[in-house]
Length: 254
Image (cartoon, rainbow, N blue to C red):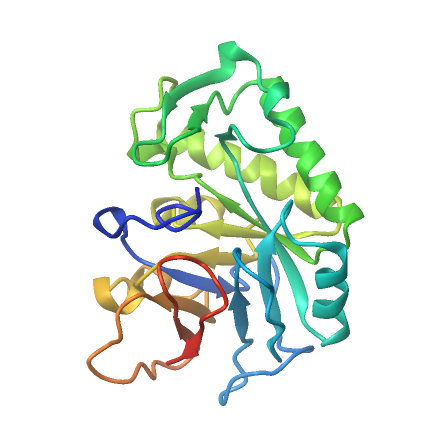
């Protein structure tokens, strides 16, 4: 699951989407790929179908599904690849058999084959380390880690914002130890507690739900909308795309 987005977005569950680059941990610049008109780093995001390489600063693709040849094409175009993966359990992933039954909690509602995990478990954290190792070996620049908003759900385990923030800090610290940037997807309530270890922020439909101020002071912003806004989106520091609910190649700059 890409929080309300991957593998298939259910519109009734969709909330808001932005990807912010920098935060307090580091300051990212559009040093590769095409920058926006105001110098904001630009993004492409695709998980399904033949990868279309664009002249963008960053390109978010699936950690497991993207081919080595597509990664090479992304890098050759001057774009930095970012690896998407879930921080929870997905039954189709190659490491699914490594998740202990005792650490698997409730299903993610609306997402068959996905379950919440015990984020305090050393076995779960070992799996996350292995995923980060894979991202490093495959030559990714950073990681886009999904489903850290466990405090909003009945997971079957302790699910407070403190527990979620602890999990985020663990993943971000391990990513940085491998030279990888870390992306916080959704989980806006955690920003004050984790912004010093976060490099990127993601969410969906920022303009539609009026959530820009949740990210005050941590831009620039990558914003995904699934409905065309009634007026052009020109807030300084934001880079906005129109995408379809399936994360294929269609992409239009707003």
